[in-house]
Image (cartoon, rainbow, N blue to C red; front, side, top):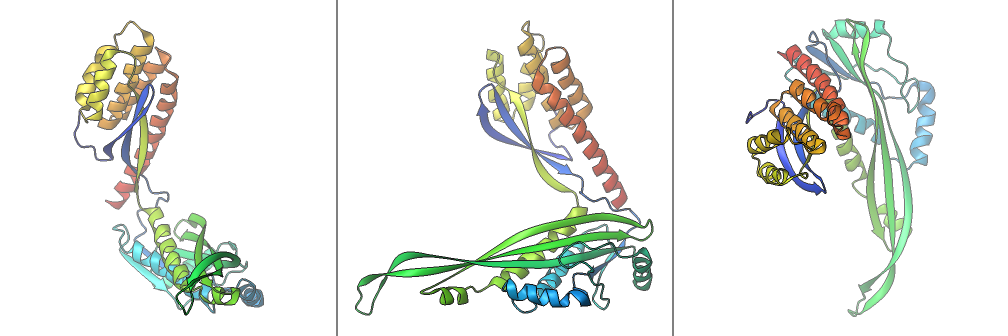
Length: 348
């Protein structure tokens, strides 16, 4: 068995579920968004500013939701900074430009507007010598303050503990963002993505007013989370590691018990030798489980064709129902690996 696999990292999870155990495999997944290989220079534009006819609505919204002055605008800038900083780590892109002297306004207050016209996108890209534009299409926050109270004890001037009512103000701010990536060469929107993220801050005091006044750090918390949202959006064009869990059989015969212990210590070669012996067991269930386990070893080795073949034998010849689901999981993984390789070839 191969000891190192380029797209898979093996870790054990010592969990038992009666007849089976689980093994965790760390797998490199393709980026959610595939960027064409000709995109080397990208520009970033903030389009989240409300247009003229919605400015009055925007002011009313800020008052009703108890938002701080210019909080949305400043937080949106933090989102753009997070996007820029993370994109600069990407080897695929040679240059990133944050364009702050062009004002693209959102024509739909607090929501995803119609795409920017391709004529305008092409004009901007030609002016700044860009291959693509990342646009923050909208950015909005909604805040809500709720109150509660509880009885606590405190010491008075004489050092005696007395009961008082503590008032608690909780501010819940929902950050709403929407992004697009424009490719002027193909007149294609490569990606369109929306995400909402809550931010909670709490204040305490001896009365509701004091509790509300004690809510500090809300703006800082929103700015911090907005920066992270920008980073996360940039990550959509980068492959990422995830954990997949595979179930293998540990019961059926004494040989399976020994193989289980070998697998638990990481001796998959030794476990595989025993499972291979059991493929010739006269009992169909035992033989089928052995083929299923061998399929998992093939996946760990990075040989998905062999894994699919072995899992298919387990289901077709021996009726192991779980193996049919496993076959479909393996085929889906094959598709994702091909997509990942295509993305990596574009970078190289």
